[in-house]
Length: 435
Image (cartoon, rainbow, N blue to C red; front, side, top):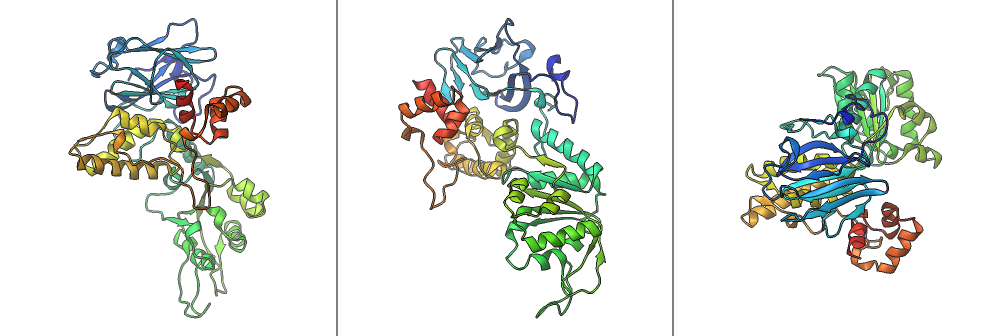
């Protein structure tokens, strides 16, 4: 694909971008097909970026719902201005049809015809994601995940521990497998353990093994540590281990030996530890629930996995894969991709894929091969409220006076004001656009 030299000059594969951020648009869906095309926005006095079927390079030429001169996007000192040029089918910003030109705070989602674009403060992390890449079997890797995986591969070559942080469902186990593959031969064992799912009182036996006679009914059994000998032990939600088990795990790491329950002689082990947590381990240490000495052993290097709401470039590819798994005839509409890009997805990729499969079934039940936004369930992508917690705030329950106060208190910062109101920033932007 053609790329702007301004973008490429600041990015090298596997490295973090250096220099100034390059605001721009990332084409997520072009004419109904997944894409990853960065379009930098140049600062004034440069001309606005014109979107339409008449763009140089044939961009959007196959989207019959886009006008030849559809809209312009211009970078200004205090935001990004989007102007509809009298297009036939309209221009949509964060799901709302654009009226008069309005300055928008980055990031936001733009839809024109059967194409969806993402306006971001910096397009450089996405500059090396190839357009038209097929994800037949391997993972879907957008710009941020590709960069994170590059960091993980370097960490695997530098040492035998890694801490991965990120929300549930964001891809921490996938990242751990990258660490394993980069540091061990293909036939080395990879043992994944969900520490939060280990029954109380069984963690020591399950992790370190036991010998016959150690307790009533005990038989010789290897623990997860012994099973991972020569490979990688992945400890997901490591913060859930109790203090006694944490101490024994530290001894294993320091001595390279494990003493099973009931054993009189330690067994030598050679393992790499990849720990993961959705909690910040430094905070757990400060709270006294996680041992500082173990943190110092496994807490560096640390790689954070971004949540899906910051990886919108992956959504069209994930949608394509999820729908094809249900039926090869199913196609995602631009409205569906737009809707998915606007939702917060607290369950991340895991939740998105589940909801997309449900949407596919709903579309099939209506005899449609085009999966639309309305085929998603009503609560798709929404935060879960426990019975003891208040229900999530609804946009219509927040009055205009509260919106005005929040914006004034946060100096017009939409993201901060939305957080104070309990809304998603896109909900607040819709409210502002309607005033």
